Image (tube, rainbow, N blue to C red; front, side):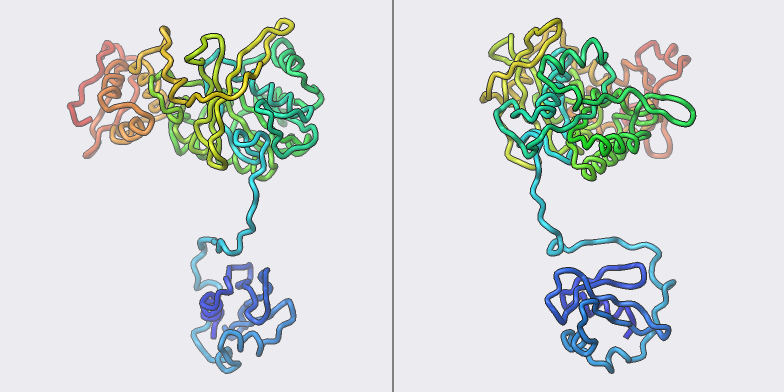
Length: 434
């Protein structure tokens, strides 16, 4: 009996064999084996060579499988290392997975070891909120709703910001929030053999992880996300975004730190908070928790923070807050929970809000920023974020997007300067098929 045949017998007996560097590892059928202790390799003749590291005898192992020594010694087609595929899918039986409890920095809002997205329009205090949370973490204070998460001692935060000065904005906000500044560390750049450069993703995730481990940080704030992505990342393309955020999520998982990324809202008028953040839908898709801030529809002097997504806990109630002046800066004053939902606070009309068409133009420009894209792909992506085909066609016309037929499909691209002049903003006709 060769190694593959023996592995099949183990699988049928519920011993969960899996590949190892020289054969298979499995649970031994001859004793109560909670961890794989059975090793199966191959003899020169091609037969299975079986050994239990717990000390079970070969006859006992075979008997438990309903086999004999003659079965094991039976001559079959020899197995050689080169006869199996060079790659294979790894798997784990859910019966072998150790249950893990979700740990929280802020229960139902910010999970440890996971990605959280905070969305909102400019001027509503997103950055001030993140500094407030970092301040609470630095002094082991309770969170804004009175809960305490799973961290009992003061913990560090790694802050990466592109919009606020450290000396004139971030530090005063942290002091106003009561922070212990020794626990808040801002990345100001990356030093390489060629000199200093700005921190960006995915290029400098290794440097970020090293700093997180050095400071034993439990919170990473990236504010705003779009400013920290390298130039070759198309923020409107799912594949690009998911590739970058997968690396960030893996960093969070390894370190156990919560990651909060900040985004601005688009100016579309939809009330579904999942589709209102800028960039690809893959950003909120990669997050395990989503938070959104907006004006309070019942009180123009206050704002609401509500949950748009909660994969790991029940949806928490919304919380009201306002920004109050404090020593030439501002801080967050939390006002308690409310019954508001995301749909309620997103239906507040803003007289300066851009039209859906203007927003669609911005979205379409982002999609086409790097390379031409098939029209069918654009329509599908647009539908996923709430734009109709009619709106996208109008945006195409306004932008002067060029459409060229290749085979059976139309390919859209942004116009060159010459093409833009020719189109005079009316777009280049391509028929109704594109």
